[in-house]
Image (cartoon, rainbow, N blue to C red):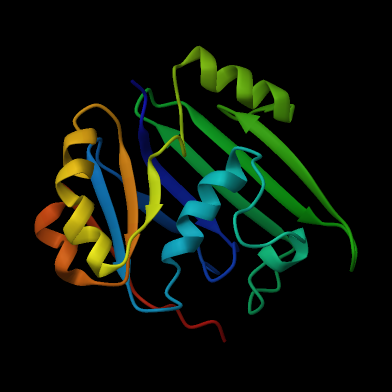
Length: 177
């Protein structure tokens, strides 16, 4: 099974500067304050793979408001060391244009889907979830068991999940000025 190894984000929502997040193969829990970007990490994964963004529709809202750059870049590196990249260029006030890459070679959005099947990479297939404290207590054993066979990326604002995960990724609130 192929997993997410790293996620590199630049200018996407509250990630103004280049940010690299490393994941383990088992259960990964993303924690942090409200507004720190926990849910945005799951949206970045959807974004780079060309999926519909979970919480927002217009692409212009994906750009970091404090950054003057007109380009969003998200690169997902898999455990097979393959890189999938999406660049979103702001062309005008109302238009954007996406470019997709596999290992730095330009490809179409449909080629991303074919490539993922080829390397047996299934993301957001019961692996990304938002958990509140009560859900963590209820589902943590089940998630831990599932993570033996697939990568789990869970989001929670509570730090009590630390002992329940193989890896805890703590996101600190970023200054958007």
